[in-house]
Image 1 (cartoon, rainbow, N blue to C red):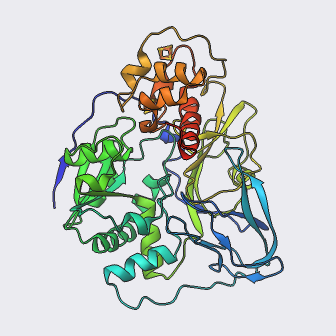
Image 2: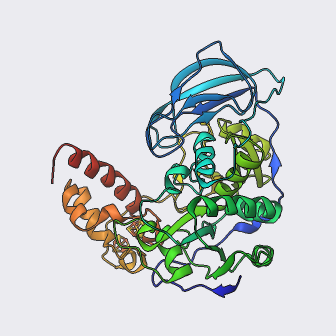
Length: 435
Ligand code: SF4
Ligand code: SF4
């Protein structure tokens, strides 16, 4: 349709891209592993319920756990083999979550979903739900629910910003699977019944912009390289000029946002009858010997992925699941991939700050940087004194955990972690009737 420059939002930060480490590496499929440990909480909402038992044989594409509510998602096996245990295992955050452990028989037997009865909106949404598709940009919200908004919407926005440093998996997918993405987008467009599709791509990906400009039925918005451009609210503003109020959803301004990987999963579920059991992620950082973009079934060991990338250098100081801004520091690499993973980073001492936090010097940098116009320093002070409801009054619940406040805090305060912790506490207090 058209290409235009997007608006920009005040505040936020400029971050070093570091995408050169992996951006030229085509996506490589990992060799099949002997064991997959598949998490049943790979999405926002209720954990999936196992539909297999120890000793059961499964195939690649077999349903192993079914959604257990409206906000939940099916889980499938990415290998053929035998279920050898169902147990609670640690995850990146340290929380214990239920996993189904499958031993590979290397017969590579595969099973597919049934053919689509038709391609009407209801059938598209039902297939997306059946295939276990969730927002693969990191949020993990069930896609079928997002494609069924209560409000009337007129615009589908595809988040192709990939604004997190180091991550290049969306970039590679845009280069390597352009037509599959376009097909997946058209199915989501049909499910929503909207005429307008906007693909928002950061200006630092001119090759991707060129590829998507060729589709007459989509508009491309060239976004300024700015962090956190991938945040839904900021993306919607930059693509359409519409402002989503605090606490409101994108549908309140007529928009639904989906991600590149979610479009591919939709294409695969509808055209190839393939449920969601594998994903693409970036393995990067100066500590990784051979940075790559790799495809692996969910439940693959992070350590096996790191080994597939040549292992790490001696200077590795920190492992991060996801990007360096919004990702989580890993205490161990003996953990297993899931749907929402976008990267594994091995960062060296020169890439991370290992110094301990010191007292806040009230410089105000965090306030200036916050794209949500919050008061990080004041919120942290309340949280540290245990006044979670005080932090709630300052709007901590609207924090998108983008890390912009902590990025150049001279006192190295762990601001984002505090806000994440406080949000959990506030939900807990309110669920018990606290105000
Ligand atoms: S940037 Fe850090 S030192 Fe400065 S006011 Fe915020 S918390 Fe305090
Ligand atoms: S307070 Fe939250 S939204 Fe604001 S910069 Fe910090 S992490 Fe981002």
